[in-house]
Length: 159
Ligand code: PNS
Image (cartoon, rainbow, N blue to C red; front, side, top):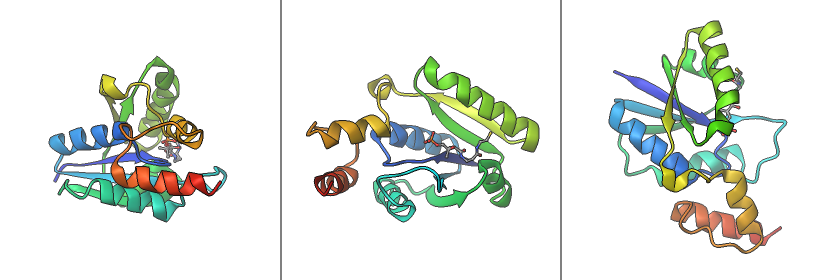
């Protein structure tokens, strides 16, 4: 079985992420979306919430699983027997850091990284911008799935 991992913070998952996940699911037998826990990073949604939001948003995709991890992505790959990471690339600004990570991961663990170009519809999109826009009353309904929109509005109305 050909398996691939889509790692990320997903705080929260956006339509841009979902586009990459769905396209990867057309190419691989199984896609594991792995939500990274970074204790030093302040997130709007907890790890469990982020996992649940992605599960709900991908429930129509039969070959997509959602999991979480702490530590290195390559250790998650090793323990789940996944040889490939898929990452979306939006712009050249993403490239430098992603290239470094991909080369590090390959040189140290033999894990390949494949880059998928983001759908131009979502080239500007990031979880951070979605949160900021929403926080100040902007309409992000076309940028995130309905379940995320509901949780964003609920969470940000509390702050
Ligand atoms: O959505 P993000 O913030 O771009 O996701 C980043 C993530 C979780 C994929 C990245 O930070 C990551 O891989 N973290 C795990 C630690 C790790 O493996 N770092 C790479 C060292 S080369």
